Amino acid sequence: MLKIMKKIIALKTYGFNLPPELIAQKPVSPADTCRLLVLNRETKKTTDTKFLNLPKYLNKGDVLVFNNSKVLPARLIGRKATGGKVEILLLRQIKPDTWECLVGNLPVKKQTGTKLNFGKLLSGQIISRIKDTAQIKFNLSGKKLMSQIFKLGQTPTPPYIKRLAKATEYQNFFAKKIGSVAAPTAGLHFTPRIFKLLKQKDVQIEFITLHVGLGTFAPIKSDDITKHQIHSEYFELDNPTAKRLNQAKKQNRRIIAVGTTSVRVLETCSHPETSNFGLRTSAFNLRANSGYTQIYIYPGYKFKFIDALITNFHVPKSSLILLVSALAGTNFIKKAYQRAIREKYRFYSFGDVMLIS
Image 1: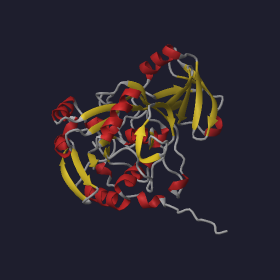
Image 2: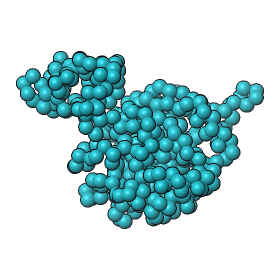
Image 3: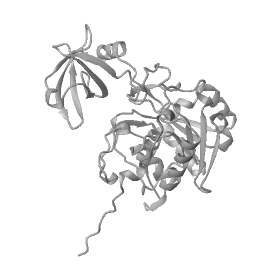
């Protein structure tokens, strides 16, 4: 029998050189005065404009889907018994007193069993390690533990931001459900002013939840992107929202995800529609759900529910740039990024934004 060879997709294809001065260190003020690069997938044309002009590129009845997850002050500085400093990043709660974490400033082989003091009332012990992360059991649990986390924790901004960002800078104004260790940054550009303009245009606004964790920002280590395994992240899509989105889809209104995290929730919850005879059709519906998703979207993926995307400019060789390349096409994304660099757009979390329509 002939053996079918799986196509290798090289990670280096999605790399690019970015001048350091284009990495935004703080957001523009007001946040909605950033720049917008519009990518038209049908014509393969790009347009430079301002984010305040976004409603001009939307249609009456379009639906914008936002991630309403709220950033946890997940960066904690602890001390070993010897006095050495150890920094941890809370990723997700395993038990009322136990968290999965990233641990820095401490060799992996010496982590398990290490006790850490974070303040007069809070301490913890590293009880195990699994792949890239550790589990820390704290001396407090539940509301008492969360109270100390909010008292002692710092806003966890990415390492390429060289300043301590204000919590308000790294939080969407509509954020509601606490659980993310990084902001769903596409939403940072939106303000009450923009929401008012969207409603005047009769654009529908919906919210889902995905708590950003290691799955979103962990680097790809395999040269063949198809071998990367994404970490799981918790999501929620409630039944009323799913029904409204399904209705909009049936009416051929565009579903526009705000951020890659919103994409991942909608695509995770998409299932083939069945006919009256129980047969699958070419259409997809959303099913309300909650739990953990490991959906990994890279070129070759066939999108089931979303029609367009509003997103930031992403880190090279990341799962995020693979997702946008899957939607817009690798070559089109390459050309758009080249233009963005040439026109000095601001990149990454506090940078400018693009609309892939």
